[in-house]
Image (cartoon, rainbow, N blue to C red):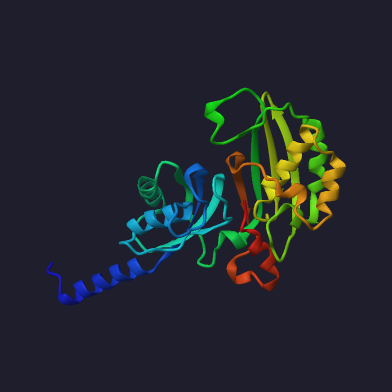
Length: 284
């Protein structure tokens, strides 16, 4: 049957609408932060967000779309469970888009669990809590661990570190352990210090974090573990506004964003009272 000009016009309109009706997706992102200047796009340096946006642009005819993250990890920090969201107006299914994006991303970034979400979804506002893990290697030199753990030569007292970690649990003003922030109050839900052989892990779960907060907490716990300070010193430092222990922070390479638990709210339901959480996501 011969197609009329009206048929072609209707087909063109259907194709055009399918290309311009952008769909919203979320995905879990894993990255080795060693060679990145952090998650957030910055001019002149390599970032995770920049690589994700560049890969997405290559699949969208060159059009750059913003990629929103649940947290802005700092330079050198890794992630196993960063959550991002973005709009995509192409024809690929979620499965095909996952394959295509991973094919366009560098080896130190990958995505998984890509799925459609409502238009208003933003992972930063939807996050219920975030969980970081800090890895300490308390053994002999180990080149394979250099990128993801901090080697501490002194033998560490994990029991003393565990007791000191409890000081941070609860709702506190964390300005002594974080960067400058107009809303420094955060709620730490859980802290766990655990040793397996020569590896010590410190897990921290909170509603949000100040910039550098986990690495400053870890530095204090290491100082407790090697006997330089006591639990009482940590408690006193948390109660003062000035930087704790001269702002000492553990190296970024030991820190990994392990998980972002979703299910709180979307951008439409966020209100002015969210300002503290929003700013708190200028994280590790």
